[in-house]
Amino acid sequence: MTALDYVVAGSIDRNAAEPFEVGTVQWVRRPGDGERDALGAGFWFVSPDDAPKPMEVVGHADETVYIVEGRVRVQIADGEPADLTAGSVASFNKDVAAVWTVVEPTIEFFVYS
Image (tube, rainbow, N blue to C red):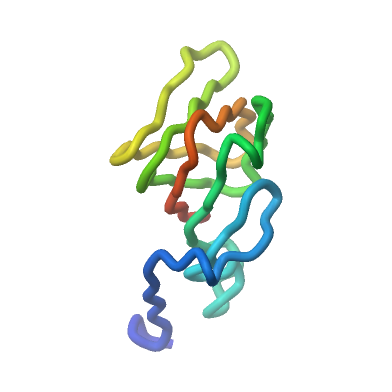
């Protein structure tokens, strides 16, 4: 397989989103596509109505996120809370627990690896 055997492209399309653990997700690349089990990417759409309370999230994979719009607050144990807003980038290691609070309707682009 060469680098060009598997190329994925996508743009934000809420109509292509499907239910997710919380909110909805539009997959750009589902985990397992292109024989890459650990690699996945997509857009996560979430609002305070979807997650009215802070939620503990334990990463099932290494994850890097880019906030397209909105605001979430993330707090790692023993750490200061971080507000992620449009243009913010964060990266989390697998198995790290964090408390996420959805402050505003948010679109997040994420990559699992």
